[in-house]
Length: 245
Image 1 (tube, rainbow, N blue to C red):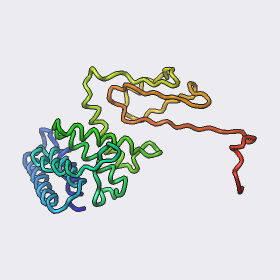
Image 2: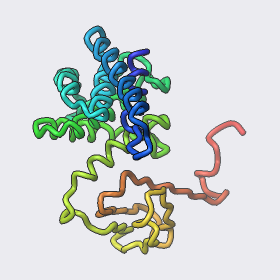
Image 3: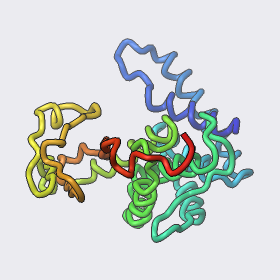
Image 4: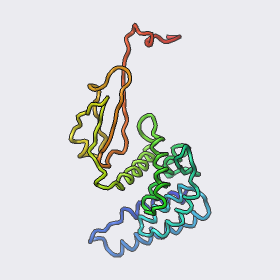
């Protein structure tokens, strides 16, 4: 767990290094030395422990630090550690995450990190493997439209955004929402903001079965969910509990 935390801190330091002209050479050297020492410590741990979360976290830290060669061995380990479920791929967590993730949420977070590493490493042979990981992630959304915990959700969305970044401009199309075959008017903020957007589609819904189709989105739509509420009259059999108060 110390190695996993160290890998996370190293990744943060590497990703947030200052490149401003007023950043003194002394401070830059101290920062760089700290990152290298952290990577060296975690590299030793990856040889002593077999944990896909550790492999992925270390690989991402190495790439963020500008040392992609360190990540190559982690890619080999992750390829071998991949597990399959209904045609999708996932990676198991063997210890708690730095944010106390474990169990199924930890498996989802581990898979999200593995997918991110495969994307950032950029090997063509790993693209199908990453896509199968994304299939697993998409299927794991919980009933609240998230992925069990804040940190897991953040990592899954990061992975989904990496997928969106692979799209070529010619493949992108405006976001369209069809409700029962009729286009739902969308506010301009949908295309201009990355914040969650709430759209009321009740005017196009009807009793019984409804069909919602979502397409396009210019690579910015990470996920969508439908929330419905309804009521029945007191005289309906559905309003009478089968027993008890």
